[in-house]
Length: 244
Figure (cartoon, rainbow, N blue to C red):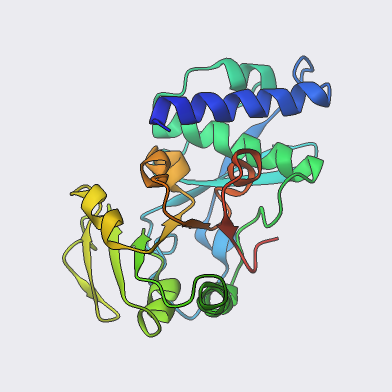
């Protein structure tokens, strides 16, 4: 599925959901706000999470008391109706962050998705350990193509599986982290994916627009809260052990 087709299908399914619950025509306010690192992830001992280093921001939508979050590098506020959200063009990371955080908030409110809110403090470390166990149980000993820099997960999986890691952050590319050299996510991603038995990809790829690139027919496991609503609506496999 191409990039444009993916987002068109996602918006269509979201529109069907809110129409089914008579929400499309209502004047319902959805606001986004930028969370401070301690609000988003607490105060974990590990200090190399992108959120704590200011590399990523977590935008939060509020809908009828339910929250929905999305990692983005283009955080801005937005207020409007759900109808406006599904009708507005999706052209930038900001546009996708508004759409995805709104989908997450509505899906959270309706009980369509689980693990919608980012975990805190030492929970990311606990989640990483459970991810390794989950992969062994579901996939055996696959070669893993890991998308994005999630340090706790990379450290855990590097000790248990053969893996390669790509990221888009220039500060990470070329560096060796936990025995793994971080490769350029803007390079030959097709060859990178072809090498692997399993793709483990950050859910924030749905905001930066790269998620459709990973849907090649190989097993894909998306991690994190950003992709919660999208995974539920599009039938994607998601792992999040500690999100609320």
